[in-house]
Image (cartoon, rainbow, N blue to C red):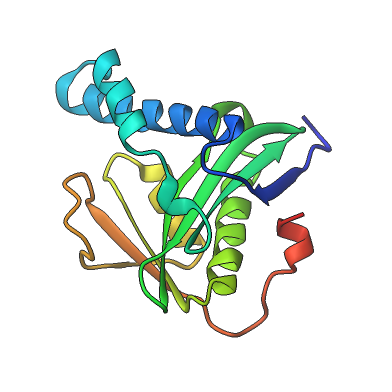
Length: 178
C-alpha cells in the first residue's frame, strides 16, 4: 500500500461507512474483553443489542462530529468527538481497521478530532480507555495526552486521559479534513 494516503472527513454517524466501522470497532473491543476475562468471544445476540443501543447520535452536529478516515479510498478508520460542556470535548470511537494499521491513521484521526473539537469551541479533550487496549494508551501518550484521575463512572473505563488544546501552531485543516 505504498503511496496510499488518508482522507478524513465528517460523516453522519449512521452512514453505511460509519455503521460498518462501528460494528468492526465494537466487535473487536468486546471480543478482546470477553476473551481476556471469560475466555470466549462476545455472544452474537449481546453484540447486536449493544451495537444497536449505542447508535452514535451524540456524535451528530451541532455538539459532535464523527470522522471517517479513508485509506486507499476505502473506509478504514473513525474517531468521534462530542462536547461535554463549553470547554471540554470527549474523544471516542478511535479505531483503525487491521488492514490499515501501521499507516499513521490513528494519529491522523485523533488530530482531525482535535481540530473539530477546537472548531466546536473546546479548550481540552478527555477520553477513557481500558487496560487491555495498550495500543490506544500508547497512541494517546505519544500524542500528548496525560493520564488523569477518573472523570466518569463507566464500568469498563480503567484509564482516563486529558489534553489541553492550547493556542499554539494548529494543524493545517487541509492536511486533515477535506
